[in-house]
Length: 622
Image (cartoon, rainbow, N blue to C red):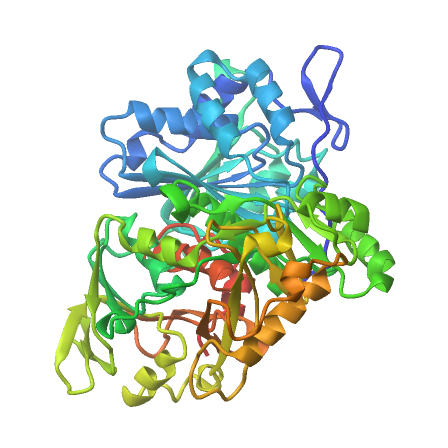
């Protein structure tokens, strides 16, 4: 059973009588008397044998309890930059129950960060995420340095982390002030992440803490602290290490079967980590690339009072998509225009207010809006109020997919996979005549409902009863002249259907859900449905819109692959190592694409996972 939802409580900026940053919650100052630079270097880097221990390594991972202002991260990042013998990649995972807002962090780092860290601090601030619970992946140095921030209680987050940790920085408030951060159960959860040879260091040094660390699996000792004053604790995991996550494999050749949103997201993520990627595109083989003609779609997270798995995955996916795609050229990049999600009926306002109050998400990320404010945001009269997601994104799927497949290291090969078979340590992909299309050490099935047939014909579907129940639905969207809607909305309008801003060719409205269809096609009946849904979101009368004739308008139709529970199936097949699955995205292809690409790529590379283990388990192929 999942833990009950606990809202995130941001840090409050306060100073003690000596001018030191102070936490009223824990009754303690944020820094040691030695100063932040001395503590970061003497306690945490020296205490873990850095930079010496990372030399000669391809990758090195640090786990920290208590991110605070990020000064340990900044010092570690600078040490990595300054070391010509540094590892190719550096990863830090850090947990923080009370993160600062971006505005507060900026002001505090300007005050507290030593001059050598100032430029790096600005880069950290620029990527600082919204204060939402869960994991947030930040990338620097073209992805060579990553920071996985866990916002929430470390005792909840630590058992949900997947990483092979080489060094631990234990940096919570003093044990007597914040005992939960030093609890034996938490230390055991951290030790479970330790890679062979992992070390730990902390400025804290009490007999109780040393015993808890011993019991958790670390051999520890005391050593004089910075300046020979307060002693510190150092340790190393006992022989062997016992990290649950698997080590990464060297970047090589991967085949992605499917060139839609799922496949393109995986291709970008793998190529960005140095893999050579071949994408097999069955549609291109027939002269019909995936999503050709799909001019616009919306990417909007969802919220739920209990912050359930769907809501958490949706939020993580939305943030990952923005981070991954915002640097793409031209129309391929998402347009952050916001989304007004209209209530299904006017009587839900009180329940909606209660949900937002319980979640306590930042108001600049999501807030309730009445009909007047919703209409002002949209620039059109709307039928009801609802919620406004400021980070709602308008995406042009056709442009996005093309841009992702143009990532350096990605090759698109026309061809339809019929089955796969092992070939030593690799996999062969065969067409319908049994001819080999391509061979690689890792193969990822991202071809939606087509994956079920490939697995069945390869004799691999039996252990996957949920995947065997995957089915395909068709859906269509309609392109409406912007003039028919007084120029169209300024932001995305969603609810029972959706209405999107003008992309230059008009406004897309959608969509339909059709079971048991023989083909995906634009139809008069489908356009009748999409136009009616758009009209239901509006309260105004638009004569030009009302006069539109269903069946006479341009549009796009496609397929959705849906699994029981409407969550995707993503991960390595336990009975076929080296063969991966990424299917069942349903109508959330944009939400899952970047996140699931990074999830697969991170596992292959041996990086810390960008997704909590409980969520990863829910979507694992089965």
